[in-house]
Length: 245
Picture (cartoon, rainbow, N blue to C red):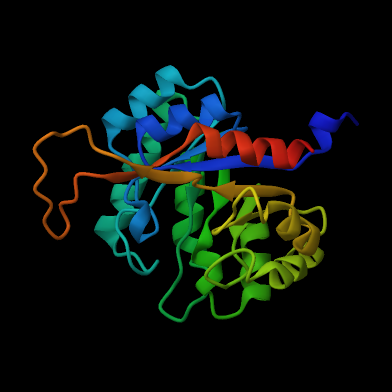
């Protein structure tokens, strides 16, 4: 196996088209496209998705999440997610990122099965809904039984560095049945430590810095700052170098 084949894959959570393109420029292996990263991420607009599909040469996965908050979804929200997945299929995306729980904190197998069936041949990552499940060991078995190719987790902690030992337990339980991707709080300075302690197969980072507005007229109000966080190609390059070292 070559070094390129054995190295951990780098996925960048891109909260905009500009972030997705910066991830590609910086050497990411895959993009997870979303919006509203400050609240955990939601499904991007159709326009953002369509242009990203046109311009990205690396695999494009799309977050399927209709709102912030919990992962207990009503019928209208499930219909929205199904329509969003259908759009991903039509546009030729490579995969979707999804997850749903029931009111008791277990994986909602019925909802997830419907979403996965709608995805057809697209790859499926189960997202960090896993990190708030009541029984992680059972949740992992449900995710595997659903046929997901990958699980994104921070080890049920705020960040992957904090949850690295828990991620290691997930990797051990999963064996070769599913790929485990460590995400949340990953930086060029801690990525080696997280991988060493967790044994994760892939890493997931937003690689963001604050982008300064070019506005000469600046009148900031609460919630209306002219500056915004955006994936930085240089940070992605630093992560790439750390993983390739």
